[in-house]
Length: 423
Image (cartoon, rainbow, N blue to C red; front, side, top):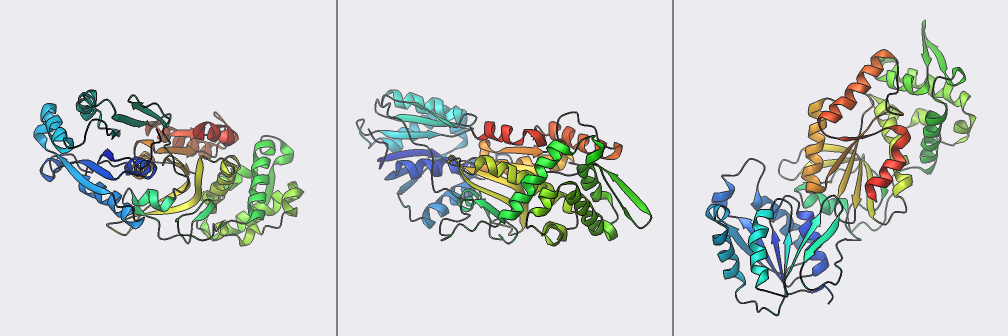
């Protein structure tokens, strides 16, 4: 049996509405029963749990796409949470007119397992019904039912704008966003890739230089002077040091650094990319933006032809729909065909614990239990030693990431680790 144009789909109101959206888009149900909390019960729950807002997020996206099945809310009262028999009675009352030969699809989402017990009892009496669940770690469908035809649980046209709107965010300010793959919005006629091919080539060569030459070898060291002050060290050490250089000479410092690097690496000079006039040089702390491009273009190498990755963007601003203010900026973001958002946080300096945790929460808010905040460190490998103050900051950042339970990736491991992440 093909799982399309089904008669009845039951979903749970959830922060992670992407999973419900994908189920609806794939199954194309004629009737949706939305299990949600009544307002009285919702008011007793902890801050951040707002079922009405979650329901509106899904409804608004479906309306935008002219997807309008019959929709009915089944409200959970506090007494039903305590007594599952009452919850089961409420469900049975709402589906009593559906004959046993017509399958009902029950979509279980994270955090609703307690109610799954009651649903399983109902399904025992309805042999054609199907319970299904998207397992977060493996992104595979787990389902119960006699129908064994494989589910499709992916979308080929999912975009960042839809994913964010389902969580109550938008991406209206795209001036600073660099889109490397896919579209931000479905109605974009052209996939405007906001990057220069020479820029990408330049950063690929720069990455190779750092990995292969930027060690303790004397020949790879760079030295230059500004006034009566002399600077010396590896390219990476000097680049990171630029964050603490007096801002009045920071631009000159970086200009001299790249000029000396091109002398060491003629192949970089041959690329037609004017780093001195680049966007990153216009920033207050260019090192962070340089690092973002350095790592971002390596990630792009991995995802460019991977069909599971629908979108990739750098410097992607995310806004809260209610407040209208910028909530966060995702340094590097990937969007998979199962609605998973993978957020890479780049840091060329320290990473405070509260900052690490805020990024973890942001990604969780955007993609529910499937959010995967990843910390990218400028350290080439674990245990790398740099100049004392830099070493202290970077290793402190790694410890902050550890405390926030963020996975971290070292420079030389980027491609290998990203391949494992996306499967």
